[in-house]
Image (cartoon, rainbow, N blue to C red; front, side, top):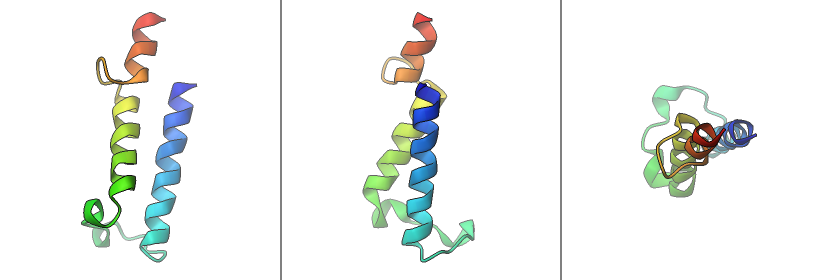
Length: 67
């Protein structure tokens, strides 16, 4: 369940990036998004950290150690 939630979070954030870049799909033209979309930047950081199961601070780590 945790994996599905954070994977969906990353897909939705990727869609927002594409819309913000005016339908641009070339990744080489998408640099500097941290300054343009700071909330989406932190969304990607949180989603990636949870999917990577970083110790102590993410739900993915807690779920893997308890079950």
